[in-house]
Image 1: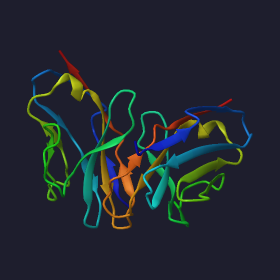
Image 2: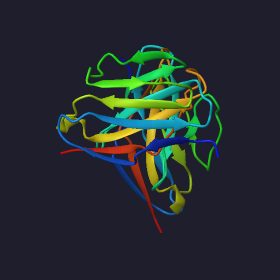
Image 3: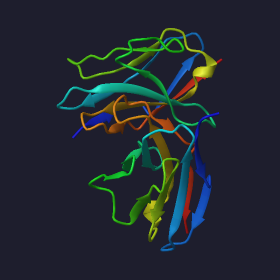
Image 4: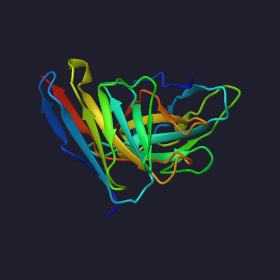
Length: 108
Length: 113
């Protein structure tokens, strides 16, 4: 069975500082990894996926199969980045498993 | 604006009193999902429909049922809610099973008294 672990429940950074959200997974197959985000009073939405290898809103994430990690990074955090972030894994049976989420607060 | 709509946003029911949560979509997606999310926990998949094909997760209690009368609507029925069923219930859709991009509704927060 697959598992997604986000070790940090809360993360607080200052505006302009780098931010990194950790995500580790366990899965015997070939995973597809995603980051979803939920801004205050908004619905959960896709932020980025590893296969796209793109930067969204300044965020990037690299899949490291050796370390079974998919950490989310942004070099300069902005106040509008304050949100709840969920790492998710799509298994070969097309089910999405979410981590418990990390709440990010960016302080001015 | 194409979207996923959930009604009601807040639902209060009594212990053991059946309750139905509603989800509709204007995206014309093939797949509709129901997740349960308890406080500070990950969303947990209960079941999904691929078109009319129903797929139940192995650990979803029998107390939870679902109906999808047409492409646009999907319902979550809780036959005899217990206190442990109080949670946020999220509906989501996707074009197909592959891809992993799911579109979520705002959720229905269920309180059981």
